[in-house]
Amino acid sequence: MADILRVHPDNPQPRSIKAAIASVRNGGLIVYPTDSGYAIGWSMDNVKAAKIVSQIKEIDAQHHFTMMCGNISQMTEFVLVDNVAFRLIKQHTPGAYTFILEATRRVPKKLQHQKRKTIGVRIADHAVVSALLEELGEPMMTSTLEFPDIDMYELDVDDINLKVGNRVNSIISAGYTAQEPTTVIDLSEGEVNVIREGKGPVDFV
Image (cartoon, rainbow, N blue to C red; front, side):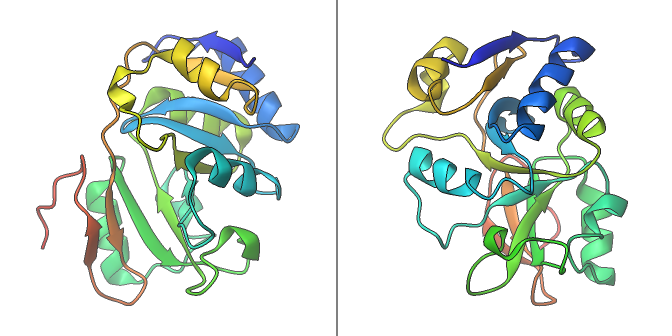
């Protein structure tokens, strides 16, 4: 089973954050809280993780994975951001939004959408996420934790451990974490296209 690391939601203990990122650096997967619920995280150079995550979530290869970034400056190293996209992202981050943009050459091809060469990026409004990214020193690949036909609102950390503890290394618990999907916005073609309305308000269309 995975190690459960219990942290304060606003002031996460550095020791637990370091332990989680050690797992990531060693090729492991972690489950961690965000401003839109629990997510699975792994390093960009972990080429095997995407397949494991796809099996956990029962999704196909055309799914958009997301890169969790610490700020816009870091984000622009990995995706192409024009003026329209920059203004929109700046106005709505940190927050519960995922933006789909064209990937730069720094993004491994296996992490990009196979047909569109795009990738999701986001900047979460959560102290645990900020601490993890600061410790890692680079973006972390991420995907919402969800199981087919299971209501995530009814699952706690121990339930998650029973469900996926044999396939992830660490689970960070910061108390109750509501599962509310991010709002997904496709900016890859120069226009604002809302793919999914979620927690982030759609007040710009």
